Image (cartoon, rainbow, N blue to C red):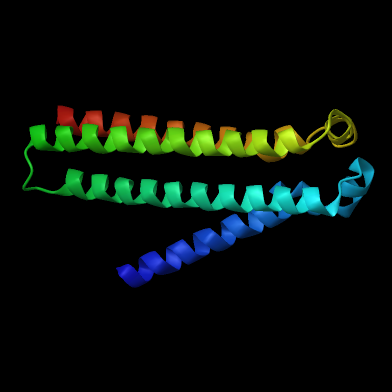
Length: 166
């Protein structure tokens, strides 16, 4: 089980790393940095902010997955009463919500730090020449995945309700 977890975690990190390399690190694109006249010092600072932010987010997401696994095991545990399962659900859900808030907070505070490093001229160039770079690479992906998660949760809730009625 531990071996499978390590493999899944490794794949997750590799996917996260490839996404961050290709999508989120716009300051690695020479065309963009030349147009914005970004100096090497600023690029290095942007990279440090991004790397630190991504590590913190990945750690929080890993913790959230652990809590989700713990929740699944608790709900499948036949030795727990319904009341105990509900209490465990409440407890772990509160922890997961706090972690999700933490992830969102870190995500947006990292973006704000990056934007604070840019001059108004650089920000205007970035959004004028590359209009999708801030919104497409920073936001749309999360909206699609959250919609999919809500749909799955709704289906699961309907299925569980149907089981309880039987």
